[in-house]
Image (tube, rainbow over all chains, first blue to last red; front, side):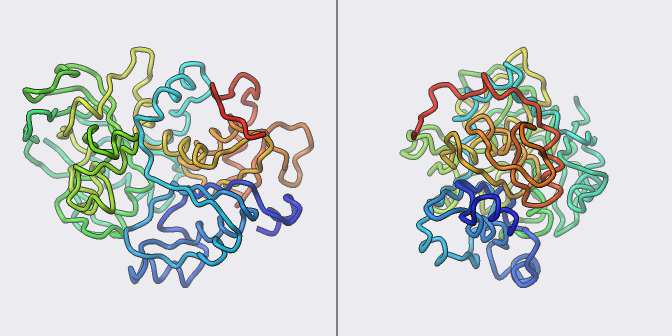
Length: 147
Length: 249
């Protein structure tokens, strides 16, 4: 965070994207109240970092998943800094035409991120690997038995 | 059919289930060929999502082959290779008409709060997901699309959630050239968000130790993110601008 502020003349970034969501680690109190005691809809550590890291009047874009109940977000900071908070679940089909273009011309190759291909029968193992972040896992695919 | 079944936090099994049936004339049954576990499935796995009922099947990223269609389905025929967006949506309500497919009003009893998502607990509509051999897809004329012939099936799976969500994150940021962008979270969505952000802006900040002129680089939130982002360095900067991008200055 300090490095980030230095790099931006102590102002903060213009845009911060939160792609973490409900189970962010990094703050013990938030982690325990959210993921252990289920008192929050999610542990908003990443969101609070985002609010800290963005400059005044900047934009925070949230695509991480949060649960439906309240979370302890630094809302006062967001208001006082005049931030634009933008968020939604992605309306997937709206993005497809552009993304098809990016894939076709080779700018994006999403399957590069696939690290594991797991048969459906062994999916429990896949969840365990992914959850514990073992074996440098980034993205596991599930290969169906009928395929 | 074989399907992944939730038995409680951290407990997942593969069990025998009935093949889903057409319940509405506009349903389709898809035989799943490739699915994926999404980072957000882990919230369910950890028991974070309210109303995740025992016995449900997760999985909102899947592609497959049309197995059976209801009597009113016009756009699909059995045998089509299709990709299914993770949103369940009707395509005709006030929200869908405005492109807010993820906020559809007709697919979830809890629709004022959440839209419908395959395999994402009864909070999100209680639809069974695609980590199974077969899955029922409602509104089959609206959601699924045929996979273009040139597209790889693994690319198509990532186009059902992870890539569009990352791209959407960059889009929501209204990034323009010269902006500094920070992405928290170096999972697939975060990496796609970073990559999409590059196509929308030029980066002026470098992390320590990276000499000038080394190409676009993100400010690292954490070391791991820096390492992962570096893999994508070297993408050509020119020619990747989005068509018709609005310029603020």
